[in-house]
Length: 422
Image (cartoon, rainbow, N blue to C red; front, side):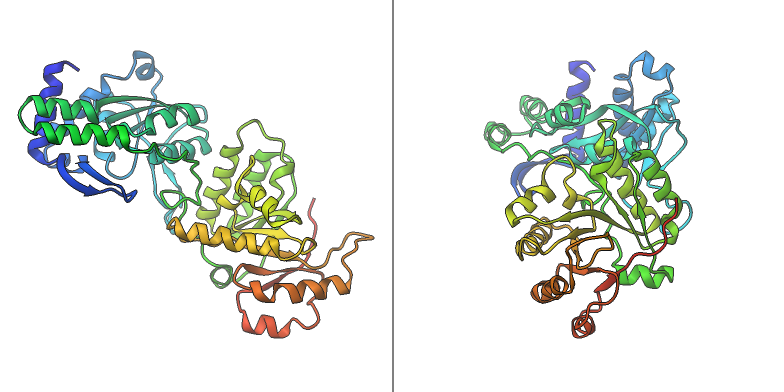
């Protein structure tokens, strides 16, 4: 795009109110001296077409020849992405923010082949979170994503995170500082307004590294129904344990049984991964939303609180970011419950409408296990103060003396073994 074309677009942005100067509170809570809202461009079909042509010109001949997919970040980038698709005659796919409760219940709509490449189209990037979430959703469907086309880069670290963390190179039409300089040169803003924006860009901290999951509120984290709701909706109390080392088989079986069950129990740490843990986790989360079931990580945590915190929030699997329930032992004392309570507090503070709860292993069926009746009773006594993060007990039969606890907490369930299918 020529300097003159950029100048014309910048002036038109200002005329339409796409870029405003003043004092604005961003979604992150930060006060900004500038606000960019490209949604208003849909009032001018001619402008949308110009922007789409500018983005389309960034596509390579190879991308056109290979019928690369186009996907706009919902919802503000969809009009531009649609125009890019029409101009280039490239196929388009659409990512949903949440699955429909009817029809196909798909999170990604369109036609594609596994291994097909896709270019993401976005209007504005700040943290890169929305682009990253769309990329992970597409990758969970077997679509390759390595590029994004962008209208405005706010220059607050998102572009570099997308490149370094997610392997997505970003090609932008404008940088925020560039837009500001053009408008100042055109006499649209004062020297003071320009300096405020430049200072804001340089002084605002880069966003924290972002790891998208379906449990994240931005995207794939539509609030899962509670277990009680699922039991009522499905007229079922079935939980299927999928004990496989093959991640593809796990996804296949979860897709097959998901519509019929309330929960699926797995051992993520015994899967033989192909170095793409995120793709499997995102795929599981997508299926959980699509079919309506809870995910249980059968981790059987049994360490001190601080260690459990690292096991749940960190490491390779980051269990607390995608899982609904996790199995735990009482062996190390109440620290594990206190940790889950702290994690739920942090989830709520970040505005996420979900709960992460524990299944207490009170009894086991394995020969020679040491979980005797005395241990079971101690578990029952210990958990009395932590019913807010407890989902129930893994046991062989109801625990003696638990009647009062269950009567007062209708969300508690016994999780008992059933049949084994091979």
